Length: 157
Image (tube, rainbow, N blue to C red; front, top):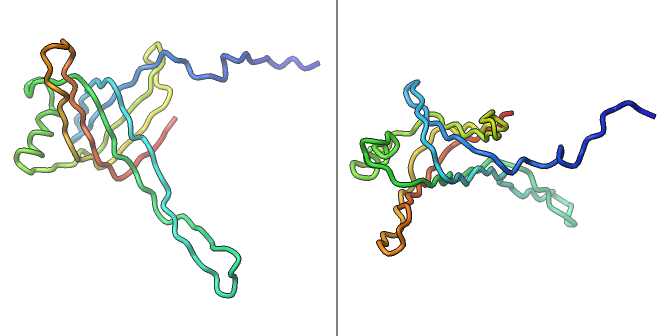
């Protein structure tokens, strides 16, 4: 009989109590903005079909390039003085001055706020900026949704 440690089923499942942090980096300066949700961490391989001469039974499908995003971030709305991201968005949409942010780091954290997974996104620029419904009857937090384009996604441990 082996003396190896037997793992319990809990060792195979993700801890449900996780947090995350989104950190924007520009000009060597990092600023952290808390968001309530992040989506769009996806990559797809586009393909091309090649027909082989004389072979009519099938076609070869080969990967040609990666396609990403868009990254969608949601948070409670902040005033311009409280958020560098809001200033960046205002400059992009009001003044048509689209300055890409070099790097965005998204970190999945455990209950002790230690990193479990880390995504790095490069060359980020805004695609859309939406504000939720203004409804005084519901008494909810006003949510803004940022839709960002990016060129490259790296998953690190």
